[in-house]
Length: 370
Image (tube, rainbow, N blue to C red; front, side, top):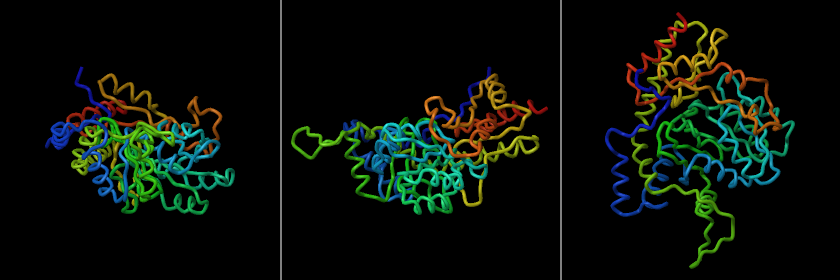
């Protein structure tokens, strides 16, 4: 069998940027949480995307949790959440003992449908926050969503876990709402092996997040805690990897776009095979290239055919309102997120891929149409 082709694997820089920062931490024996790399990573990432403040944390999920806590979400509150997403977007709502209501996507963006969001506010006028996702590096249509949130005076949180480097009308995703969260999991466009970051222009809130995420330790000579705390801060070693990865972010975006355009060119003649939507106002990072299928093939058939050739592909995210854990939560929509799930496949989009790897993926799929 041929070598494995991954969906998206970690890709360290050829220049060894990450090792240089890690070595500095080892030489200084600063391997515990916090340190110069954490400070540097926060500062450099915020500058890269145009955010004023950032808090580096252990995961994107932790960042979402802290965003909700900073927004004052508590027991009994309602939070509108994008339906088509990964569970980590929504689970922190439950951590805060709040109630998620799921909002459908539209076919034009695959992200939150402003029309469905407005409809949801008519049913639930007392909402505390909205979580919008920039799925697969595709920006949501933010202008109407921002306008709706301002009209109803609610906090807007952007889940930009998959969209670092993506811009909406020239502005980076994650910086358009009140809070933005990013993930650096191993499969993301840049990775720290694990980790996340919360960004905001609100200095007071980010300072509070740093406090909560270091066990809410009071400023005292002994261990004193006046608030519930969390062990969420990023380590100095992990942050060093992130600082090195930031230096190659533009290269990774360029390669992801190359992969998308390669597939689009090779599959242009395959009837019934479509691609995720790219809008004029959206400059995606193309984290994963996703295709849609007509009735001729199911996503599972494509995924299993690729698996036989040792190639990893995956389904589109299964909508949250279909998840067993969230059974009983309300859903405002018309079935678009489910339609995308039923037709969609995530193709290998690994920046380690060669042209030979890409041709191999394409040939497997072309044979299905022959």
